[in-house]
Length: 482
Ligand code: SF4
Image (cartoon, rainbow, N blue to C red; front, side, top):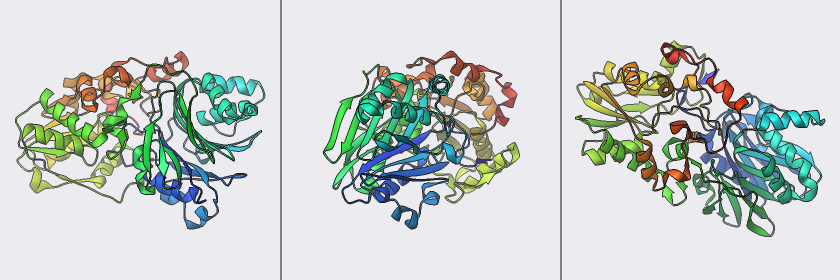
């Protein structure tokens, strides 16, 4: 069973945070912060806390609001906490794979929360099993946690640094020991991680938007390979592993991260507006109105409307109440799912030549239904404009696009996709146009899913499954939605 919401979009694997507050209310603050990271994962949520001696944890399947209540939070006393929201890309979606992952070490219990994907987790796991290690879950996070436990006799910071030397992949991680909190980022800095302050303490989180609900502010982004250590002595930075070429995920700017987050000094809302402006420059067309696909297409549609001089027009209403409606994932019910979620406003659409703006096309199933919905509502023309360049290659760094057979742009030409969608015209933003909108340079980003240039080498056993048995083009519409 899969949820209706965002069924044809790439899924972020996880959101993480860590908190230190002398008030002893770390779990409560973590709960509020996790709310702001809910978009990064809706399958499970967890918080681990320490009062200086004992690490306690609670995690559940479901949303943050479903996993926690007043009673549960009151049973999590402590001044240190880490939190996690999960969408599974490796390891099944079951409670034992939910995070944080809990292990016993020489310094006491430790808890680990991870966003990303380890590329050598299978190999390391097999080696550790051969050496007698036992695993409770199938997640790559437990591999990382048990490696740390093995090195913990050298102290938590050294254990983290030693673990970073043994793992390969994309990772931003929060570790809780009885007396400290450590955050660290992979040597290429693929997944985001920022550190900053709350009123009387310190915080780290996947995104700056988590700081708002706890009245905190970001100090800075962690550099590739950097770690931040937070304890009673304060907050300090150290280099855990030598940095490699910076390769921040461009998709964070296009879609994953919340529009009110900042990456570096860049406002993501403003970057997405500029993507819309660039989309117009690259693909102008005669039309009457600019229509966003809510909510993710809104900033780019504003930018495109501004650049084109055409009116911005909301033409679909998004239901707020079906976020976690589970349905049997057959094609007919998936189509109903889109209709339950988005309702067209016929009087805004009838007779109009509209530019429909969205962030990405993965399998093309949802976009196809939206185009049909617009024509069924009486649109004269539907010009689809997409801010993500065509996704032609799988992601191995923690985003749920690991099979080439599921990617429309890997199977069809742009013209074939247009035809498949039933759109009047189709225009994707170029890689150059998307990068320019961030204010950065192509060399700072991972662009692998767009151009096949993988900044972290992907082992053959990991790539193999991604290229096996691609479905026929005609099957794309019925590929299982994630
Ligand atoms: S391959 Fe694409 S989605 Fe994956 S990390 Fe790179 S830019 Fe992001």
